Image 1: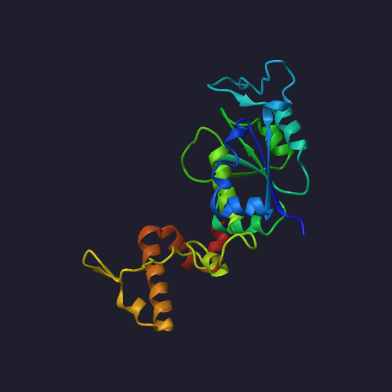
Image 2: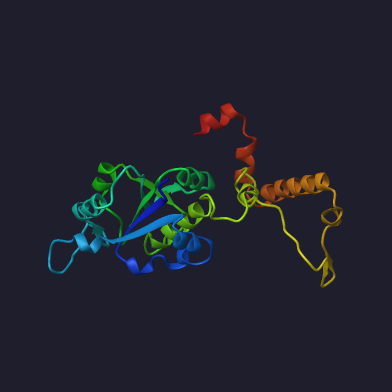
Length: 237
C-alpha cells in the first residue's frame, strides 16, 4: 500500500517540515507512514531575478502570484491527489475534511502569499480553497502545517489508540468533555466523584452530558447544527 503523500508548494520551503517533524507526525514521517515533499515555487520563475508575482489588473495594493509560474509548479507534482489552495476566503476546514483527506491518497497544498494567486490557475486546476479561521495570516504556510497535522494524526498507526480520535472534539459534532488525572484532589479541587466510581456506564453518561453542556455554552453554532431537522439542514446548505 502506498503511503499517504503531501506535496507542499511554497515560497518558503525552510518552514517545512517544521512542527510536522516532531512528536507523532515526526515519528510517522521517519517510519514512512506518510511522505512529505516541498517544492519552491520560485524555482519555476523564468527570469534571472526569479520573479513570481506582478501587480494586479484593475489596480490596488500588493502583488499577485502569476498563474503561469504557479501552474508550472503544480505540474511538477500533479497526480490524482486533490489540490488545496490555502486562502482566507476559502471554506472553513473542519474535522470532517481532515477525515475525508486522511482516507484518500494525499494532498497537494499551495501556500499563497502577497494578495493571493491569480484566479485563472485556481480555476484551471480546480483547486479546493480552504481557510483555517476568520483571520488573515502572512501566507498559507501556517495553515498548511495546521491542516497536515490534523490529517496525519488520523492516518493508520500514527496515534497510539484509535479511541483517542473517536472521542475528540468535533468527531461526533460535539466538543470534548473535561479530563482529570492524579492527584484526586488538588488545591482544594476534587475530581468529579463519578470518575472515581468505577461505573463505566455512569462515566460515559457524565462525559456525554459534559460534551453537550460545553458545546451548548461555547459553540451554539455546532449545537444548532446537530439539532436542525435534516430537511432544514439540507435547505440551509
